[in-house]
Structure formats: structure tokens, C-alpha cells
Image (cartoon, rainbow, N blue to C red):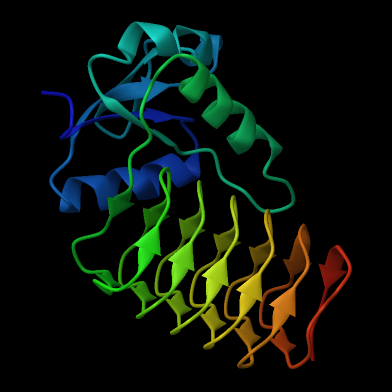
Length: 204
């Protein structure tokens, strides 16, 4: 059975945080895929066992989670997801044991929900998202694909967040706001109105 086994792709700092989350949720981590020059090294207690191009070798052994971080651009995460799917692999959802995900919420594959994050009722989370430590996603909100809701961010109810958007640490989105695709909301920003254009937004 491969469905409690996990291979992580990307061996940087975000990977270390995800390892802690995955362990808390009872996953068995078989190893990490990373750059060729790092093969044979470890990320925390786990061996770097190969590179991205070896994904097809592992599709019958484990599920996959992309552990490359994302702030400005989701391109690398998307590319790796496409490699996994093309190889016939399956993407995991990894949810920390101390996170709360409503039974009425809907999560697409490849998403990680970090420690003490909250995803409330009738919320939809897209593919390949990072819902980071202590982030809060309120009721009836839709988060697009490949978004990163960073540490301690607050997304209030009935918001619509476009694909590949980054919400910085401690940012607050008021109720009912819509954000375009490819937005970056900076840390600590307070967003009171919808944003219809991509780019960096400082809020307030």
C-alpha cells in the first residue's frame, strides 16, 4: 500500500516545515527528491534519494507532495505537479494533526495545511496550495490553484482568491473581497477592497 507513504519534492526550508506536519499526521516519508548535487545528503532525518526526473520510478511506491516554497511565483511548483501527473503519480493532501479543516470544506490535491491553520465550512481550496501556520480561511471562501496563504494571515468569509496568489504573513482580507490571479499581498497588509489587477499590493 502506498497511500500512507509520501515522497517530498524540494529540499529547502519549506520542506523541513512540511516534514514536521507530515510526521504529525502519521505519514511515512520515504525520502526527498531535490537537485542532483544534493543527492545523498539529508533533510532533517530523511535522505535525498533522487531528482525530479526520477519521479516515474516512485509512482507505485508513494504519493507526492511538492515542498518547494512559493512567494513571488508558482511556476516551479506547477511544473513539478505536471511532471507527477504526466508520470501517472498521485498528489497527496497533508494536513497537520493540530489544524482544523471543516468536514464541509473541499481541498484539491497537492495542498498542505500547516500547524494550527483553520479552514472553515463551505470553503474550497485549489490544487497545490500552501495554507501556512496559523492561517485562517473563513466560511464560503474560494482559494484558487497554487496559492500560498502565509503564516497568520486572515482571509475572511466570502472571499474569492485568484490562482497563484500569495497572501503575506499577518495580512487581513476583509469579508467578500475578490483578488485577481497572480496577486501578491504583502505581510501585514489590510485589504479592504477587491483587487482586479495582478501585481504587488501593500493593502491598507
